[in-house]
Amino acid sequence: MAIIDFLKKQFIDIIEWTDDSRDTLSWRFPDEDKEIKNGAQLIVRESQLAQFVYLGQFGDAFGPGKHTLTTDNIPILTNLKSWKYALESPFKADVYYVVTRVFTGNKWGTANPVMMRDADFGVVRLRAYGTYDFRIVDAPRFLKEVAGTDHHFRLDEFADVMRSRLVSVFSEALAGAKIPALDVASRYGELGEALLPLINPALHDKYGLEMTAFVVENVSVPPEVEQAIDKRSSMAAVGNLNDYVKFQMAQGMEKGGGGAGGMAAEMAVGMAMAQQMMNQSGGLMGQSTPGVKGSAPAAQAGAAAMPELMTPAQVAQALGVGESDVVSSLESGDLKGKKIGTQWRVTRAAVDAFLQS
Image 1 (tube, helix red, strand yellow):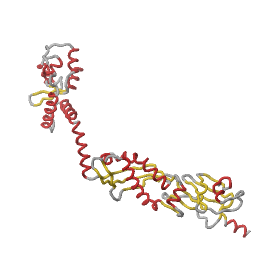
Image 2 (cartoon, helix red, strand yellow):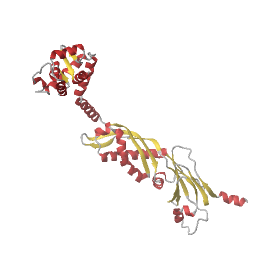
Image 3 (tube, helix red, strand yellow):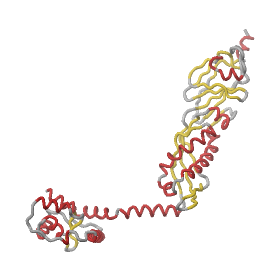
Image 4 (cartoon, helix red, strand yellow):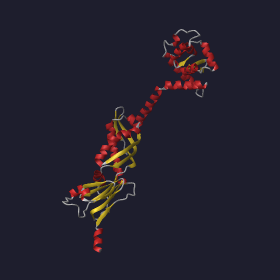
């Protein structure tokens, strides 16, 4: 019995691994120079893959589940060992467990500026950083190129290599994508998604990895590019200045009074009104003033042709009434308007509201 017990101890009948860490990429089962017996049980848990290696050659791989090792389910290993008959005797092989779950929240960043050529600024130096998520999708390639024969390969052993490789691929992908420097600096939230399809092929072919997320959290650009971004934003704001002034005027008129910025507002109103009246050459002011009494259809037709900002005379002309009637309505509050000095100004919105009341 002692001899039988001794022989049993020389063979491996159960192969399994419980991962109690969060940073293990691969783990080699310690065989202690023992052989795997025929019918041994291989246990592979979720997010694991068991890869057999025989004399440096990759054999069969097993996903999650409980597997009984026989000739039928290890055909590659059977061929490598040149077994002519069924697996009857114990055999030696290395068993590597590879973790297949997604490793999240890994940091990357450019230690030195990345050079990119831009149509507007020529050669631009960029600095960037962010996070990435990845997983192992090709176990043989990963073991061959990254982990090697390491008994317990952890994430921190690969972080520096991954970071430098990512920066290299990021630089190449950024140059190939030909994204303008202004967009790189102002839309880096979308940059990661755009670069992900360009980065993944290189990582898969080199390391057997798939990047599931690549996030660019920040991009630093030279001062001249920052100034150009600020200028572009300012120009966009200037383009909408006329609408902004009109909105501010309407708000002030509806409240029926000035504010802390009354003088500046009045100046803005005057500028907007002058611009509006210059654009209306040959418009309502040049038409003959109709009588005080007019039909409702005529008033509605006049209102449809009204400018956004008007004098009482223009309102009267558009509605077919007298100017004094318009002034009276303004003073009584029935028609909303803004009095600047001794002059009234009325918005089209105020006239529409007056007609509907």
